[in-house]
Length: 229
Image (cartoon, rainbow, N blue to C red):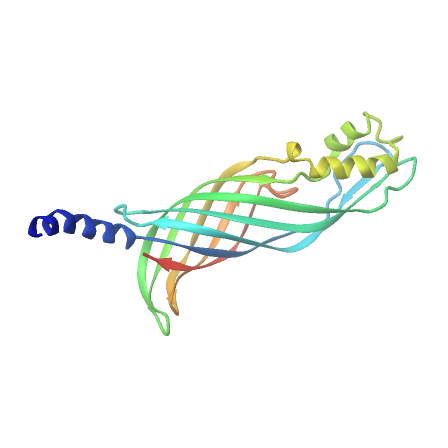
């Protein structure tokens, strides 16, 4: 019995330490708003307008390990989406307004470091942290000149607007046409205890093209609620 205790006690202690240096939970974010845009088509009398959409929220989850000296490692994912309208007009007529949806699935790999520990009334101990890393995305495309030129057989001025509405809807929902951009991000914020939750409140700025239209990046605040083990 003594030998069994001597054999398995170190393993039990090590396992306990491993589970005490990680955390996971849910993540909510208030990401961004997108303004109305009109891509340049370079054809007189032909216009394309992608409508604006506001307050795109994200929901996802996260996992982190802080067993490594000096820095912590984390992985988190999120899904977000919104609705907008597409309008197109040419010499033939005006396409009926096409209700469309934008959506993105994102994953972030981050190295973060504690900057300073602080005490906050009602929350107890907390710490400020900062970090950065790599991100990858899968997002739906937004109507543009190249897309319409392909669907209109290189003749935007004479394109049948009724056929274009159907073809455009099919194109935007076809998974083969989804975009796969990637980029980098930086983030900073606060880790604290809220009730029984291991919580984070931080701002993240993402540098990545083609995730959202007409932008080389975006940013937003994120709130995490989870458990530490």
